[in-house]
Amino acid sequence: MIHIDAAGFSVRKGQIVDAAIVPVLKQRNTREENRQIKAGDSQVFEERLDKNNSNGSVWADSACHSVKREAALPGAHYRSQIHRKSTRKRP
Image (tube, rainbow, N blue to C red):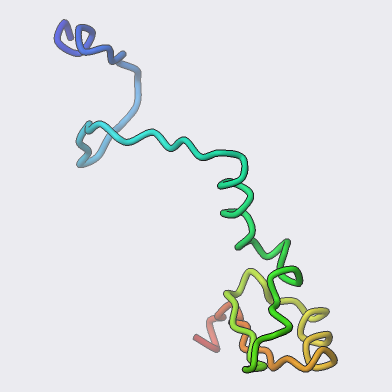
């Protein structure tokens, strides 16, 4: 316990399975970097569409899938390739 306290750690009640304590880098993004990271979010899906894209296919992960988006894409001359969440009957 003395070595743990001396290293700046505190002991608390809990359970750790197969773990190691290692130093990790601290992430320090600017507000602009955070905004750009968030731009991949499904909340800004429409803003991310490139009207100059010569290929009309739109690929995205299942977080971007919605009935409303699927209906709107063909009207904007896009082909939806948005992934859907799998189900037990359709992997």
